[in-house]
Length: 87
Image 1 (tube, rainbow, N blue to C red):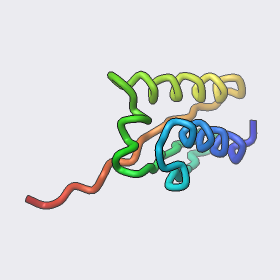
Image 2 (cartoon, rainbow, N blue to C red):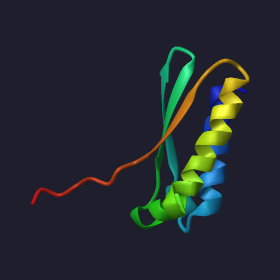
Image 3 (tube, rainbow, N blue to C red):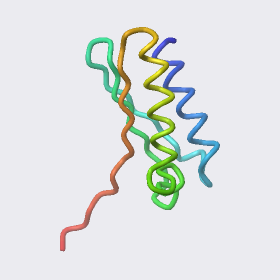
């Protein structure tokens, strides 16, 4: 599967999970054949992407990991960490 198609598939899946689908953005960083995809969503939608005990994000990682493994590659999925304010 083309990396652009993978990124769009991930974006569509995440948009289906959140309240603000227009704010979903996927950034990709390539390392050779492997990819790191970072999911950006509205702050209140982070929990929907993570899921209870991380089950939703783990399912996404498993699915995309399998897609890449067919071609001998790896895909890592990360969720954007909100910026922490200095205390």
